[in-house]
Length: 467
Image (cartoon, one colour):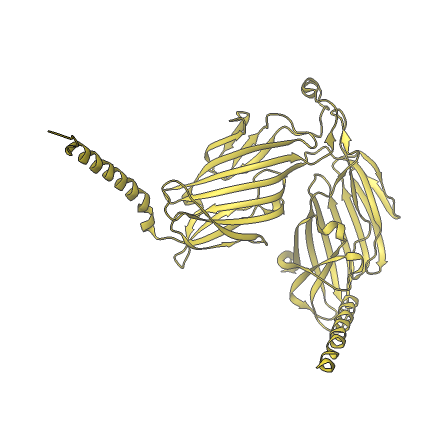
């Protein structure tokens, strides 16, 4: 029996060796003839635009392209998207096709590098080229230095990256541009060739770089834009078939920049324009059109320092916390509003109803560390299912409200590291029998009827001991 089990480890090693050989040969068959990377550091949400011109120099067709990231960046990736570009017509008009991007584990990854696989719609044949447009977004990637600053100082941050694009393929030519929010750059790593002009740093062009080439750089610059971070957002969407959609949002907001030191002076803050330049005292929330019954309050009570502007296409709510937020300061508040149900609830072709609402956080330029969306369905709803255009965690709960008998089904969607690009529509499908709409009116009518019968019985029954 032992003799039969011994060859298995050897056979597994053969398969692993074969996989490693195929992965290495695959990376050698793909070359990147030209790569351009643009890094936008204008806010605390970092956007990277990467253009790759890929060529298949092998003999077999390639259906996947790998993206490589150092382990220090993978945990900060909030969003990644890849598009394939093509030119059509005599005018060579560009068209874009979205490609699937999924994380991939390779056993021979050097130095803990993490990979994402871009699946091509049509396999790249031998000798063919393809142009890919990749967008990925980082959060919590700017390191404040100094870590603590006073009210009168500006906020300086570090950004760390590589002058060379990390890739498992050979790159024949590449260039990197870094855009800063202002011209105030304290220092940056010089790698020849590199230069700076205004708010833009340029690294390259670099010629014929081998796979996994890496050249660390650090940029130390001024960034006084508000680092608005919502540590936790719980958003409850309650559906009422009587014609309304009730939204309640609970925020735990923090300034994620350099921590404030010293004493806060409101006199200096209001009299000097540069005092507390990196703080923020108002936020903008973009709400759906036709919103009404809007309220904004915290633990103390209602906050009147808010302004609502509405039109037929959108609604904007300007909110001001009770105090300006400096680095490390927090604020907890609630926003609520009501929407007309007919704008968001529809009926599918198979007879099911579905809610079409916007995912994400309505606050502009805000990072949400933990986002929880709870869709409360009417009592009696069955077979709930959610369709979200990106991976989220889903589960069901039950909520009891007034006059509920069996409780209301709640579809819970959870996502970490959410950014404004996640503000896309999602759908929640369910089946509902209209007879359940009569449950609460019948309960109220029955309660009044029983009360009326009890009153009649009390008035007509003689409870005296003797006549």
